[in-house]
Length: 388
Image (cartoon, rainbow, N blue to C red):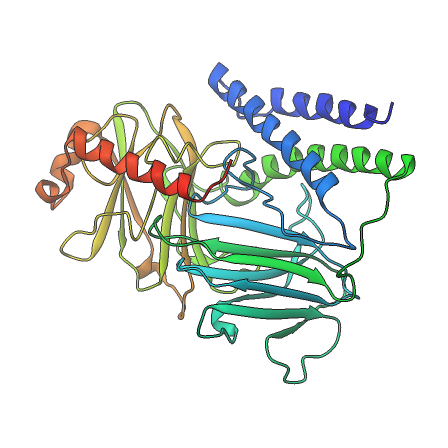
């Protein structure tokens, strides 16, 4: 049967999920199976929708196909490319906080982070007054050509990230075309090609699960629990992104107070992630906050309270039944080096101590109706992205 390799891969991936070292509860396991379902959808879609002769941008991770600690504020698009071909990327710049481009060499695996051969944001582009742009990626030298970027040997993926701060910002458009391929159809399927695609999807599924189980071990879980690192350039080569990371473990009667300066960067975002290294539910719950959503205190600091119980403040970040998880800050579109002074400080307290620990507690409080309105705004902003 042509589908047999993929069916075998599902069974292998399911065992990886069931045997994951962090699984302690039925909720952990059920979330793992939900995560697996998203991987099945994503890898099958990629195997059948991607054509190197007629490339297109696909959403590699999204609200129902999560992986790689997906950022609730980001739309991710990727296209497979060859290093010996030339590509034209056209689009219109939306009103989002950031639009960045990255060319990768290789793939993420459980043994390797792919090399970043080119990374830049749209400040490097000449964009027309109406917001439209055209970018070329190819093997030749730029030689002063407008919006031309050379593909290094081994270039295999083009990744585009569109990042929101205010979720009412307008998304842009983007399209990729291989030079010389316009107007030509993709080749007809053969039995051999069909079998290859199912096999490729199976390898991708198993690799996806193995890879993202490994990342927390590499970058988070070896850090002392309930701490966060100083800001650093994000591993993987994003040219203008700094990040601060950590992992937490809190009791139901505990809270983590995270204090961080409101940055001068156009985008500053914080999120929680599960031990599956994916975002928590960010539409029905406030499990992330960025610089447009978070309340800043009069002293210029943002104070977040991470807890299971509701402390009654605007900047409550909900753990939604996850006593353990990932902590992540991102600063994007930066124009300077970030230092420890730009980063967070962390304190774990009892939930009944939160009010006394917040110097502007009276200004931080929020009613249940006001908090519900914040959730409704998140749901509306997400729905306006038209992602399903």
